[in-house]
Image 1 (tube, rainbow, N blue to C red):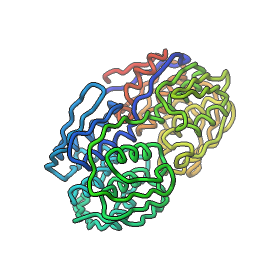
Image 2: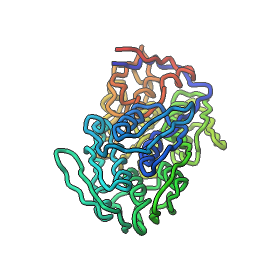
Image 3: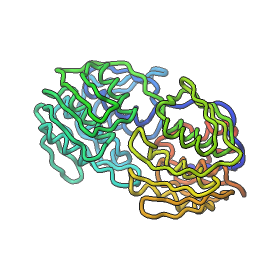
Image 4: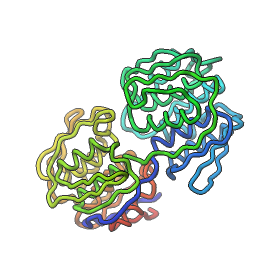
Amino acid sequence: MDKIVIKGGNPLKGTVSVSGAKNAALPALASCLLAEGRHQLSSIPRLRDIDTIRRIMSQLGVGFHDRGEVLEVDSTRITNHEAPYELVKTMRASILLLGPLLARYGKAKISLPGGCAIGARPVNLHLKALAAMGVDMHLDQGYINARAPRLKGADIFFDTPTVTGTENIMMAAATASGVTVLKNAAREPEIQDLARLLRRMGADIEGDGTDTVVIRGVPELGTARHEIIPDRIEAGTFLIAAAMTGGEVRIEGCLPDHLEAVIEKVESAGAGVKVLDRALEVRGPDVLQSVDIKTLPYPGFPTDLQAQFMAMMAVADGWSMIRETIFENRFIHISELKRMGADIEINGSQALVRGKRPLLAAPVMATDLRASACLVLAGLVAEGGATEIHRIYHLDRGYERLEEKFSLLGADIRRVNA
């Protein structure tokens, strides 16, 4: 099993390009089930999660053809409607296949999903919404068995904003009979990207990017060509890394509008951030200042950057309070940061970080995707030898060649076979 080895102390300098967004690519791939024919998607990142959903969809009968920068997805002939546990257990986003299969074929059998152990991400919001659209469902030995002769439009209120739930029902409702209104819908850029793709396929959707999304069902959808948006979480990870190493980094191929909350907090910590059209230029300060954050649904500070920001606060001057409001178990990286000398106390959903220098190199273990990135960032500033990060398969689920990109920025980082 691979591990990452880092010798910290090098300020990051240079230019880095951001890959396509994993959290936009996954629903885009799932949406290809909605219409017969060959779809063309570009800027699909090469990630473990992408490989997983491709394997699942291949078992359904979907064909994939890499055409250079374009991935051709052939959903002409679907021969199976079951997503097996062996594949679904590694990725919660596989639930996104449920809506499209029901919309096109009126039946689906999906294993209850797995993924990162960061807290409850229940699928009950998906199932409740689908039931309102006329789906008959029952659970059998860990599988969701669902059938619906024809989905029908409905007024749906989500108890809490859910990204995958909003995406799943948008896809299911695209060809449903009547009008579907999603209230308290999630507003993330990835949802807006899916809506753009669905409209290119012929769907009638409005309100994406707000908390009320209206989908008027159409008889059928067609194929489309679509480019995935840049990964705002990857861009944010580089933004934080540049600031905490005292570096000077240009982050190209990103959409700064998607990172306004993060940019404001990084600037408050003392970094200089220049916002360009599709790029950011970041200059780290001599001394970082502590800043409080609270994770919130978009457009608030993203939970997927909380761990990385905490690593920066561990070396900032002063005390910072970090409050996690999205996932109840998203502090499990703290024990590993403490192994590196971080001074952090947990009180329920709040973490009090007493910043100090330096963090110390140590062997650590990644516990989830974003915790992996947090430990990489901590390793970039750690002193006293090499930091070894184990179980980096989590990292490969959501970051494309992260160690190579950091190496090009001057970091002493490498992947080795453990």
